[in-house]
Length: 247
Ligand code: 1GP
Image (tube, rainbow, N blue to C red; front, side):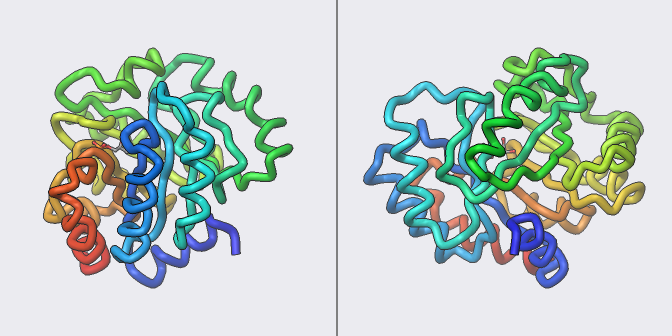
């Protein structure tokens, strides 16, 4: 079964899924192994790896280790084409449709396509929408694109409809890593009323309650990153999984 099919099955059987984002820059090799083992048993449904910027050394060996240790699907969440790696099961093949920067709409995708084919990674076409979240996030800055205002649900809906008509497999509402405010449940709800394309929501989600509210509003997958980088919060992982599946 492809990773895409597994994700659809998660949505169908559990109502919604939980993805943990691992930024390889944040962990050394020993730590990353421990972290992945925790995710494996937390009830999460998948592991995303990547970041808007990867600066640290040894990223490929960390990616390799992550894939070896992970018992869940590992999905690359690339900040740029240099992050392509064979050590993942699938790739969110992102197009920043909220922006008008041709490089992030189609340019990088064209450059990446032959490499993706060569590496044999499963590409999952994902419409990436950056939503304003209280301060400039790395995703917004790096993609050189204006975010969608957080209270303009109708703009998000129009973009989501376009993504649906263009055949994207997922719509990703992204407040940005470390966002001050996460995407509103109102926006997730508005988008879900107009399209059946599964909605992923991430950025600034720090509590299982917020995650649950977003799922109840219409999100099909919730992503958390930063909040779990503080080891004192690692117990939250199980709570996130429970809250998301219960919703
Ligand atoms: C993935 O960027 C998010 O969409 C992760 O955001 O690090 O704020 O959880 P956080």
